[in-house]
Length: 117
Image (tube, rainbow, N blue to C red; front, side):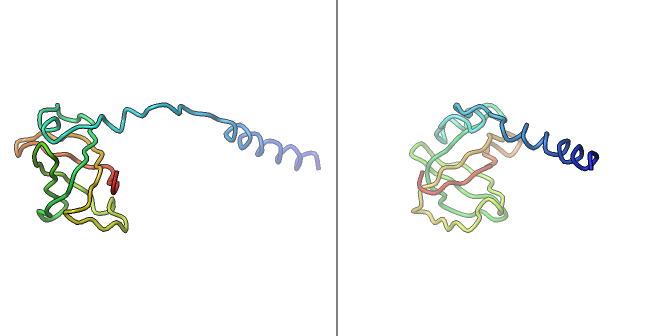
């Protein structure tokens, strides 16, 4: 009986320790600063950005043409990021991701799609 009680006490100890853990609740810099297309085009490779505007065309595969008041650029949005969201050219979206500079130009690899933000 003592072994059973010891076993339950040993198993319960890690559960109570993790339940009381806290964490940082302030700003999250991994989301990236709000940026315009013009700023994203000039940013360094791998810079985190948040863009707000409209997806105006599908370019095939997972590439889309994104537009805001400062210009247009190509963004790559993985299919699973859409979830059940429906987005048309008139839908305002907020895209969070990182700048990707390569020989083909500058794009944004999107991590998150939010509608109407």
